[in-house]
Image (cartoon, rainbow over the protein chains, first blue to last red):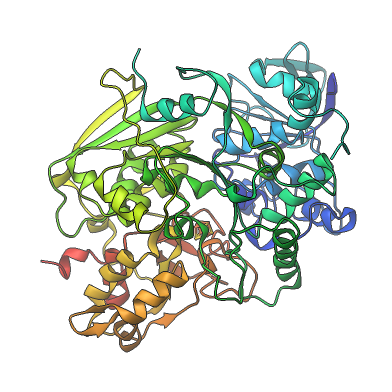
Length: 194
Length: 432
Ligand code: SF4
């Protein structure tokens, strides 16, 4: 787990569902094949309607034409982020596109759980609404230990509190649910024990 | 303190006598279900984590049902089925329902029920968010991702956070033109798409218990559209009759305690319910059918795990018999068993399939088809600005294919009535 996450913001609205995050027609690629897997980065967030893509202005591609990774490292979302399907391709595609953290007012349950158990990125909840104040492209820093997000603007900066990660922080620290279970002695420690 | 039905089942599968909402517990899994979209990823993680030679924890408890991308020429989609087939063979899995063979079933949530994998009191996880459908059988059932599924494949266990429970009671009797779909759309409209996040939705009341098992499945199916973790209807004689016809495996019926604690309680008068739709682009964008009646549509779609069961087609057939459809109408049976019933069972002397064909509808093969868009050549998929009335469960932008199309979610009665007139139509115009 990184202590400090830095990068620019890509801002989305409320109820961003998994079909927007990764449209169903792309779910056919292998997640284990290193080359094929890149396609998930390419199509990440490609289902977001144009108006909502990169708030406040919209119309900003998350991943530019011909690329597999986004210029952005942090997604700022509103309420109920990741609602819809249980497809793990959704958090996976954001990781493949280079996302390190998603900060939202609230998450849909399965998406949140998949993000944590799969160790794709850290899902942070915020007590505050940020999608009106943070603009796509703003430079952000997340201090994971302190639970703070800082927005750096020309000459000034603003800091926002993040909700504590709570009981899932152990899994996040371990890396994913398997590493967590190995540490806790729930499954054998050597990967290739079988 | 008393426990809800969800708490009872979870406690029974943990090493604790009692659990309370918020507890993080490890539970034993009775069934793990996966399909062609998430199965290959799950298998990949399982092998990476437990080793290429590892065996699943219990082959009797793994069910693999390819259903999403079946009748397509997409090579990646077909490759994914090959991965499932090879895995089922290597692990000697008894419950793999292969495409292109007589074992093929179709949409996983209905196939689970029809093949006897839904049993009261059990814990079922599936790599599909609509796994909550199985809650109709008085069991704990919820959707998970590939990582969690791979963990279960190797260990037979998973951690869960015990959810709080919400209780929705419907007293009295539903009018004849009301279907379970109207009820779930009504409730989602009332509580919103995040109204049940991290919670269990428990259903109660005479009107609910009068529903058939199929209608109960419709009700539980869309708990996820309210953000719910699971849905639950207590098992009764109807449940037992359905289950006993399909499996000999033992099961256990749990009841909520009289002093169980619910974080939300709402009682509806069943007789006051009206046909409703969810307008584009959200399942909680509720309107009474009477409020949107007259909206022009280009297509009517009747299918999916929500609206592609026999009872859904029987409802549609009652309205379509002897009529012609005014717009493209797609009929997609969820499973091969439903397809067989369409060919064999009759309404007023005519088989359902003939009723649909004579009305001018197009019939697809059992699968998820256009419910989730899918590869470009998927049956019933939207490609432009179509306005669709659909018995499916999601109308997010692009869900049925095109981001520009507009989807209204409705009951099979409403979808059939609208197919006849070419505009959104209140089923009461046809059902007196
Ligand atoms: S029919 Fe639709 S909702 Fe049901 S499992 Fe298939 S894609 Fe999912």
